[in-house]
Amino acid sequence: MGRATNDRLRVRHETAARGVGGTMERVWLIRNRKSGSVSDAGLRNVEDYCDEGTRTLVGSTDFPEQPLPGETKLRDREIDLLVVFAGDGTVNAVASAIGDWDGDILVLPGGTMNILAERLHGGAGLEDILARAAKTADASSPSLQSAGSNRGEPLPYVNISGRQAYVAALVGPAAGWVHVRETLRGRRWKALRRSVSFAWKLTFSRSVRASIGARPQLRGRLVQVEPPAEPDGEMAVAVFRFDGLFGAIRMATAWLLDTLHVSQRIERLCARNVRVTGRGVVHALIDGEEQHLRSPVRVEQGISSCRFRRVSEHENIAA
Image (cartoon, rainbow, N blue to C red; front, side, top):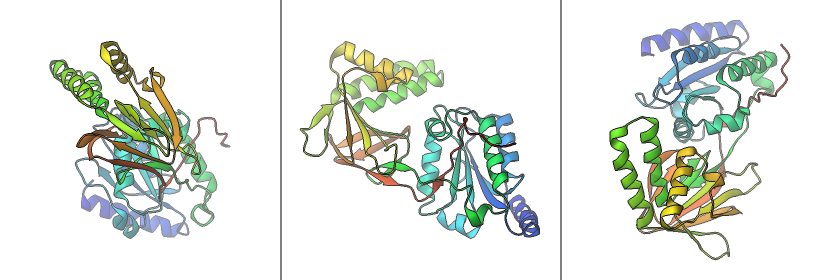
């Protein structure tokens, strides 16, 4: 959406908002057309949701081609709601870009995994989420902003060396298997052998150690840390340990089938702080996006400044 189009939208919708007593909710849409499940039909439905009922679409961003809006821009444009139609990695980038902006985010499943959207909305599909979100918002009008009846809630996250993970942070050489999974998903068969070779060598060339409180250090090939289920809870920590050919095959299969959580030889703990050490630079995945972090990697929990809206598929909303 160009600047001229944005300006026309702003003038038209600000006029409409004044006509209904200023209760319209100002929306900014962020979409990633390269994400795993963003279709043209789905995008049209999302755009319709953003610009109907009690909502007015002020502007939009095509990520990653365009830069994400920051805290200053969102405040200057008086944005109430960010609608993010993308995968977990894009949602993470948005949450990191907006700083201390304290508005709401509605996460819509547009990626490959969509783990955060599933946690927030109970596994509901895109159309159900939009329909229920619209009914909830419209039912709370005209006192939407003054009463805060449609506001979201802050989410716990994992702070890993200053970066936020709302789904999970994975640290260790076995994180390199993500390249194999993405190669298979993209059906890049010619690159598969190279991806497997890289992941195999990386996994067995080194390990990491996790320090949790007064417990003895735990050595493993991968440390997974998930945010607390509740703001006052503790992070869920899993240390994956394996050696030898069969252990590597089991781990690789779990990576490809997204079943790491049921893999064998896992040490499970709960903690508020974790310290992961390795040799030099440590391989990591933060909400599915690859990072290289310098050891030691410090992991602790935090609470978001922005609020995330939940739309449960089991929620009863009067028509």
